[in-house]
Image 1: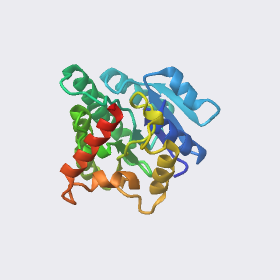
Image 2: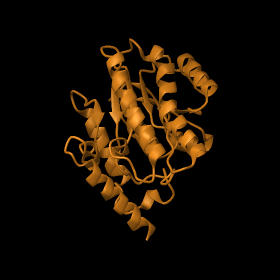
Image 3: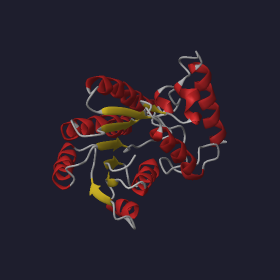
Length: 248
């Protein structure tokens, strides 16, 4: 929890930004990376141990440039948190949007992990965090591309954990619906988990010894455990009702 050098993608807003602040408060060196320089500077403002790096996880050259700079300027980097992601509440039938979602959420995670495994390998406390979603386990009726991208992140996390066993820890973060700016109006949407509450519970999970390989808050367990409980269809219908209520 302390004395790490942590790179967080998607660190200019939402969960990534909140995690950056919490880890910085614990005395870690944090590098926030994302596409919008102004939002990264907002995250870093007032924190001497937070640095910024413009990065597009959907661009191979940008990922390579980021890896080269981190290796040069932050050689002690031992932790990567993949927080970059996009979502639309309705991506049905829009193949261009689906391609963009998958390129950022799934392939972006894979690009970053593959680029940074050589740097993290052998470091004390080396850790990769991926970010899936409760929707990886119970797909959103109107979000097939988003749900599939997060299911892909879950599958990739399982593979990566086995591949890197004994060298780099792999922790999957699977948030529920959280009040962030991920979709329009979500930051104040009733029924979504307040961001501070989510971060409190997530950080408490990180503090556990041993650290769980899946960082799950209580709110996401109905989705994460749906298949085990034989309730996937029931939980899908619940999500459909929530969507219908929002559209009324």
